[in-house]
Image (cartoon, rainbow, N blue to C red; front, side, top):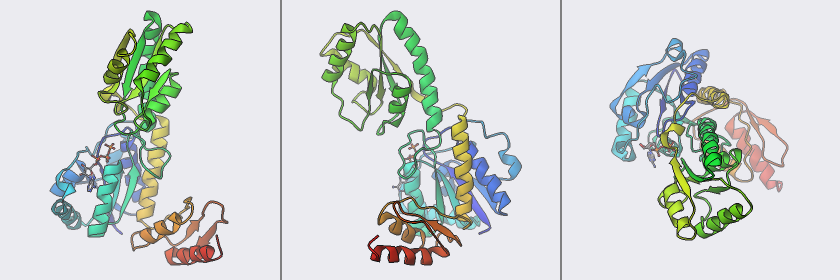
Length: 340
Ligand code: ATP
């Protein structure tokens, strides 16, 4: 592999720039050229590409957003759109891709891989933290800290005016931000999309707090936790009790801003690791339980990445080292037959 492409797609997340920088710098260290693809899959279809040298990514580590820009593409959802994108990649001599984005971006990358055999490594970049297989996604920590700062300020007002505040944070279908922000900010109630939200129970809880002498409360609501978000939930609660409350929707301020140290480090590590994987330099450490490890190895072994040496470890089993996928698969088979 001589030339790889990198792009950001879906919602922007603080730390995406740090990941782009790491990809370019690691590629340089391994003797690979990098092409930056602008505007995600939309730009890929149009062939919007720029060569990225080591100097081009100087001073972007600390910047929020993404210098490669991002977009959502309807056309890429079609087979024709993906064929056009694959054509542009081929014309530019791009042999592998690093996709930085969320679950939609990864789904698109899988299609590109299945239909056009373009090797892709995904770097999880989304403030939502809703990607399977990784504890944290790039941007989540920054979003949580930004929302927390806002909540701390609102709490000052809430305490002074003896009011209840309903604060809506991002999260249409996942409550990770709400949960972390609520815990760190000492919220009385946290409403997330993953759990049923009952306005009557919340109303009783708030009244109980008042009876116990609590004069102000914070209720953190993920935007998808209740129809109409925080405002919708407050209206539903007011059908049960008259509660003096204000609603604040934090909105897009949670997306931007300079990434935290944690996000910069995660982005730098994952960006570098993605290039190593594409270049076949990875020593994989599998932490998957049971048959998933085998399925994963088989999928990855279809000629995509071919590390020379792998460390394989399944929970509860002794780790072993294998030379290449075939040996690793054979060894896993042995363990399965031995009743492992
Ligand atoms: P975030 O979660 O932060 O919004 P995301 O990566 O999930 O990020 P999406 O808008 O869902 O954002 O996906 C980005 C792009 O990926 C879409 O605009 C579309 O072009 C492509 N994509 C999403 N799902 C698919 C799919 N099933 N098949 C092909 N392409 C897809």
